Amino acid sequence: MDTGCEKSLVPRKLIPTAVLSPTELKVYAANGTAIPILGTVRLGFCIGSLSSSVDLLVSDCVDEMMLGVDFLTQHNCRWYFDRKQIDIDGQVVPLKSQPSHATVRRVIVQEDTCVAPRTQTNVPVQLNLSSWRSPHADWLVESKRWRPGVFMSRTLLSDDSDFAAVKVVNTTAYKLAAVLHYHTVFTVQAHEKCDTKCFAIVA
Image 1 (cartoon, rainbow, N blue to C red):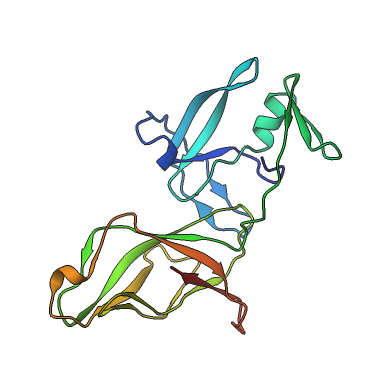
Image 2 (image 1 turned 135 degrees about the horizontal axis):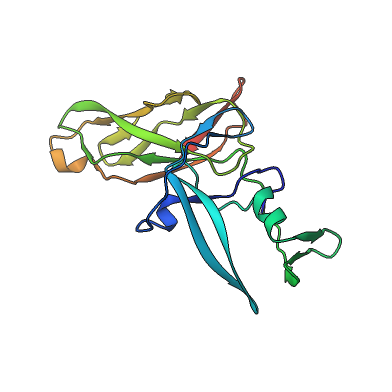
């Protein structure tokens, strides 16, 4: 749940077969980045004896479900911070806190890619938001060995780019040594040694 989020969202990966209704609503993260919306869906849920539903925006650029102010208002929610509880339509639910993921992002390979022997290839990727509060910044991919003879080079990804890519080098004589599959995921963490406002992607 997020009181700074006006609309509730759900990742498409959690409901891959759900039929979506079209919407022209435009949504932006706190840093001003536009969040592409695929459509809307109504999902049912149960909390104890309470059965209800929630209207959600669906996006393939977020990593986790976010229940925003629209949900909190619709279901007459009262948040008891001192008791770590929330009242949802009269049903009291205990809450658990989790560390902020504002400076953590996931980078997902967008298509199957095979790097030919002794060549380098730009592999298209997508940067997903894990929080509405992700900072507006450039993101640094640290170089690493993917597997013996296959390396990912150091790359700076723009926060605004619709065509992001990371460079992968295959130094072997084998084509199958460098195959990256659709939806391969990199983990994104803050880079403490970076002098500018950027973040590092590490495997």
